[in-house]
Length: 116
Image (cartoon, rainbow, N blue to C red; front, side):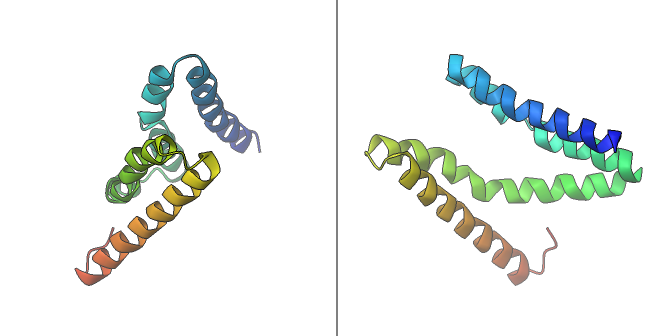
């Protein structure tokens, strides 16, 4: 139970740190958020839990391919906000675009018989 508590607290700390730092500096918050901290933590937790470097390797490869559909979100959100869409509507729109991107990526994997 202590192990899971440590995992939760450390993971939550990263999220809180990004939001708090971004209040003071959007660039520094963006730098911290852009670091693959979640992925690194997942690699560490997975390796500690399983001791299997191949599982970590597979996770890393899968993350690479599934990051690609999220990239348009970071361009579209500021564009929609500048166009006056409002935060919640813009956020909903980019979530839908990202979901569609995931769908297309998974269809591409299936079409080309690629295992992400």
